[in-house]
Image (spheres, rainbow, N blue to C red):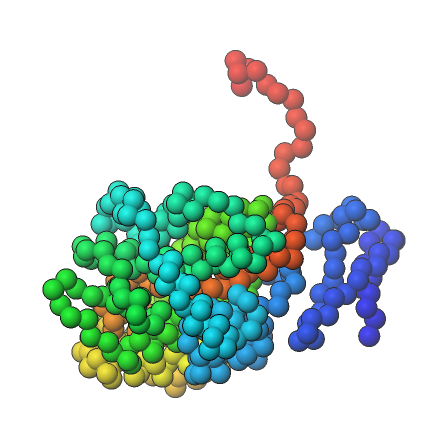
Length: 427
């Protein structure tokens, strides 16, 4: 196979190198295209444009494959915990016991958030969306950690990463407790990362916190399943903001804002809003399945199918089991969740959905779990952000260590051509 691609335009031929990835993906390297041919490519949404070479995550949407650093998502969700996966994504290999313990201890040592941050949180009304609160608090961390990260120093880089992993779950928990009117909590450093986070979220004043292993395990899996997903909107945002040499906290704050959108991280929130609307209309799932199949009906069935996965979402298969276990363990009798299970059953059995491979995706099941745990709908995307944090950090670190140039997309101008200026009194 030739390692060159030939472009012919206006009678001239131009050769460009072809890059081959380790999973036999091919890409035409066109960075010299404008210089040699005065041409650019146009690809709205960058759907077919590779912005970088990355060694972090491999995704094959046609085959339903997702791997972090070569490890299947199935193996990691079953055998690793979230902190192990975070270490893997960021540093490239699974940690041994000694490294994992040190990683956890270093995170514990940095888990304190400056008390003055509470003043910033107090400035938000209870009605503020938690994603706006989280983005602002993450950005505000810069003021309390003003030193620039020396990316050539492994020590500096490591400390910045540990600080963010330590403080971020505190901010997430505070966003929830602000929403619920609960006093802020720092949890318990003697327990695991995810258990401590759950405790910070839900411990009530005057009550003893009781660990629920089924719930903790489900949260752990959810965070792992969301930890990275290649060059999606928020990850690309983190990389492009970081490419200007903006700091880690600022870059992550930008990623949070990108994740907020309903077409990205807000999808699981949209699932619950859809279920609530169906309940208000009588809860007839068959009626809404028929609406979903009607091309002339504007109704969209949220949480089914996936923009990337054309077969099935491998994450959904894993978290479906966890969702069933959580619902069974908690014994919840919730009409919204009953509607969700009804939609799931009909979609998996209906020829229309089966033929089009419109299976429930990870957003569908994550929304069900968060609802069962009494997490407010507005917090769903915040939970997504906590899971995605290691991936964002890994992508930022890789981009900086690779010395990637500042992101600067081109455009095709379609506005007015040169025209004379008309004085104000003549317009």
